[in-house]
Amino acid sequence: MKVDFLWGGAVAANQIEGAWREGGKGISTADCMTRGSLTQKRVYTDGVLPGFEYPSHEASDFYHHYKDDIRLLGEMGFKCFRMSIAWTRIFPQGDEEQPNEQGLAFYDSVFDECLKWGIQPVVTLSHFEMPYNLVKKYGSWLNRKTIDFFIRYCETVFKRYRNKVKYWLTFNEINFMSFHPETGSGLRDLTKPQVYQAVHHMLVASAKVVHLGHMINPSFQIGMMMAYPLSYPENCRPENVLQQMRDMDVHYYYADVQVRGAYSSKAKKFWKRESAAPVMENEDPKILREGCVDFIGFSYYQTNVSSVEKNRARAEGNMTGGIRNPYLQKSEWGWQIDPVGLRIALNTLYDRYQKPLFIVENGLGANDVLEKDGSVHDPYRIDYLRAHIEQIKLAVEEDGVDLMGYTPWGCIDLVSAGTGEMKKRYGFIYVDKNDDGTGTMERYPKDSYYWYKKVIASNGEVLE
Ligand code: BGP
Image (cartoon, rainbow, N blue to C red; front, top):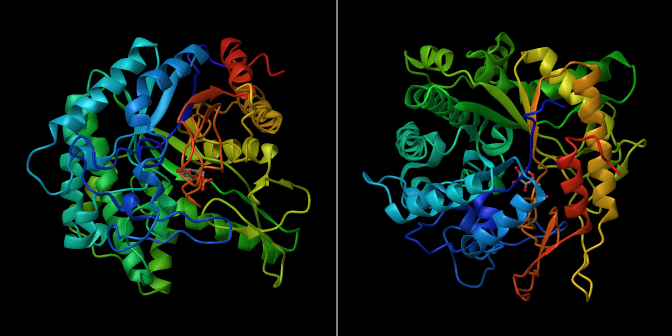
């Protein structure tokens, strides 16, 4: 791997910070998401209501533990740390003229701590949350005004952290953001035209932010972030191959704009077929053209199967489920594990866009056990990550893919976005916090912590 390969891990503010009302923070959409489970969906309530459990309110309490947490990451040898800024710490209501200094000061300290350990922050500007007030008062991304509020927030943090942060991502998993309540847009039950409209506003916002960031600091590297649920045709039946192409087109819709700076001809056909063309301003094509990203960040957890056949067995997955693949094992939460698929994903994305790639999420959610002596034995996680890193190396070294870095998801245990559970753990670092609210919040390195430390130290050579 390249000498400057960015080995690290990833988290998101609403899933790790807690302290939902401290430091002047406002209520975010993520603060209104209840706890769920594999069988019970999380609910987005109309504000924070009595009688509901909201896991983001305390989460893993990174807000009060960040120094120790970053020290543990530093001791593991992290080169980078992907995290997000909670928009509501900077603009609590979203529509203020002036930012909240306490929120800005908090992230100053977090970044300083990272830099002290030689860790580059990789910062997501919007990870599954936004000020609740913007949803209530303006209608979230359906309203073009939200673009301006987002720009004001991004300009504030770009200027403030211009010498501390080099790597930025605009919207987390933008291809899921507008459709699923757990992704924080606060929008539900949208019609097709509304979906395209909200997405258009987000794409314009993303492009404007990329352009602005480059003006503020030309050495900023600003990427997009998509979930990449690669799908395979069920077999060589041409209709299934065509279906696979159609299933992937849904995801390329976003990346095509963010990487190439314009909607594809196919996207325009979608609008026509569905009578759902978004309303655009005259300047929008120019904005999109001038706001192309520097790199492509993506999450990769599992693959799906595409088929026109009915009644296929189903599998769970990241936001969307899919058809069961008989060749693959599943995680405890039913996600299909496919390391070779990651090599295919890297090749496919690189062939299509010829831009540097960054795997900003990957990992295994599992129910870990904290032993009496403080150890956590997670060989399944090591196996999962090892198999994926082997495929990454093949993609880079054998296939020539340009890959910037790798940040496995939830490097410190945190709240699951999909289910709101703590027990669905991804971390190298165990957080003693249970779904029933018990636990000391103490941190414990798992076996995978010591394993990944060796992986980083050897730049991916030692995987045993
Ligand atoms: C992605 C999100 C993350 C994260 C991850 C794992 O969709 O970007 O925020 O949570 O998936 O999903 P889950 O938490 O549902 O296991």
